[in-house]
Each structure stands twice: as structure tokens, then as C-alpha cells.
Amino acid sequence: MYFNSLQINLYVENLVKSKEFYEKLGFTQTFVAEIEGKPVHYELQLDGFKLGIATKDSTKEIHGLNPGENMGCEIVVWTEDTDSAIQYLIEWGTVMLSEPHDFLEGKLRAGWVQDPDGNPIQIVCKRN
Image 1: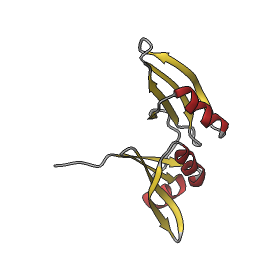
Image 2: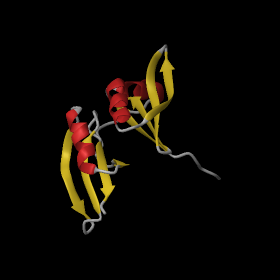
Image 3: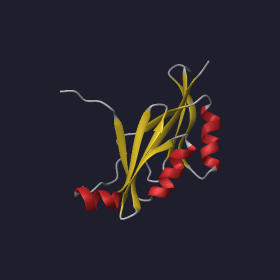
């Protein structure tokens, strides 16, 4: 048995708003799935990482799944300057979950924001 091509899918309320959020983080669209001419799933990529976003409604209608609220995971995005990156996202209207702070004996600096569906996004950089 061989598995490959890791991808994470998030179930979202507003597909357009979520796509715009992840594009602000530098993701680019690589695929769109449409049903009756309407987008219901996008695949986005950043630095080799693939993220899928799909509407909760289409997930229910097409696959019979009933996605709910989940804070049991996060997406981590590495950057060169955590503070500047978080400020950029806040200016765009993103909600901050945790102020940038140093940890691991000052080796890393991280802060958290949330995507439009409340999923935590860690913005982190290595400290010199």
C-alpha cells in the first residue's frame, strides 16, 4: 500500500471569503470544483502545501457529512517577521487570537489569527 500527496480540507461557510483569506497568506488557486457552474471546492497551494476548502453545504449534500465546529487543529504558516505578518492580516480585518510572543527560549516568535470560519492559524518565524 502506498499513500502520497498530503492535503488538508477545511469545511467553510463562505467559500469566497475563505479563498480571499488564504490568498492573502500567499496561497494560489490550483483547482476548482463546480457543481452546476457554482464553485463548491477550491484547492490552494503554498510552498508545496496543498489546502482544500469546501462549503459545508456541499459537503452535506454531496457526501452526507455534517461538519461542525472544530478547534482541534491549526494551520501553521512560516514567515520572516511574525509581527509584521499579523499586523498585515489585522489591517485586512482578520481577528487575532494570540498576540505575537517569543517561545522555546526565544528561538521562535508566534502569534495566532483565525480564518473566516474560526480555524486557528499560527503565524511563526525563527528568531536570530
